Image (cartoon, rainbow, N blue to C red; front, top):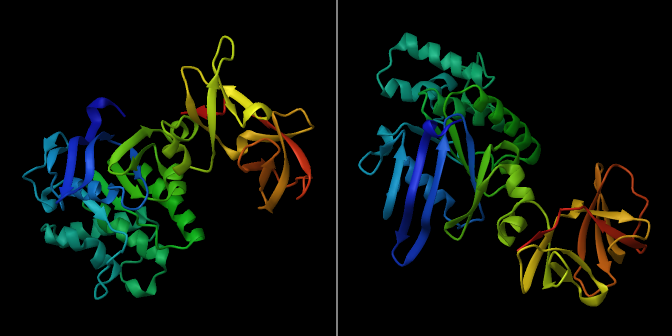
Length: 350
């Protein structure tokens, strides 16, 4: 990707519905070849943002550009985008092939070329030979792939996906994540995905924009968002974390945040002063042989095969800690007294 390959650009976009401001001065770019995900809780403004890109809503202020061109006067059907909805809406009276070729037929593409392209894109979604099937004969995952083929067959520069996996069960959703990533790697445009599911966002995305209350909190790679969250909201929304109250005190050459009073522990807090919030991921705690930074009692234990989750009741004046120990075996059980260490550099201070 390069800056010259920008396919979607939002510049100071605001969307108001009466007295409600749903989207607040949003700015970002999506590049050719990129899988870009907008993630956030329900009601944060992410679907409204997608609808402004697609043309089904117009910004109150600001501009949407697609392919370098302003979209203010361009209707949805004339934009170089296609949209896959949460509800698939396949035409039940049409075959799979007719569903996929519907947009081509409307665009006046001839029957022979239409058949070739339908066959090509059904092959892309691993449904070669399904042209004459009835949609009702397909599984949920197969129907989802038909919807993807229908959206891709017109070869848009930008494919917009509005939570298309949310209605699938967990196992099928994981399989479709792999399929989506594979399909994306075989196309030339960009995928713009909207979801509240942080697991899907982390799995699929080249970059993630985290949205909260109408504005963008942070944009970055999955690793940056997870390891270097810009706010307590981002840390809490993307993955699991322990958010702990602290107070910055003199730590010599580097200020430190003290958590839990005199009997608690400290973490580096460079550049911070006063009251702070500290984020520590559950997997960044480790059970030690008594030489950790904080001691406590195992209040709850949940074995999950590849990891064991613990709830630790600290001896110090600290709220319960969520701890994850990777691996299939763990010798620590409920009621035992443990000592916890913290991975160097893991705590993030806000």
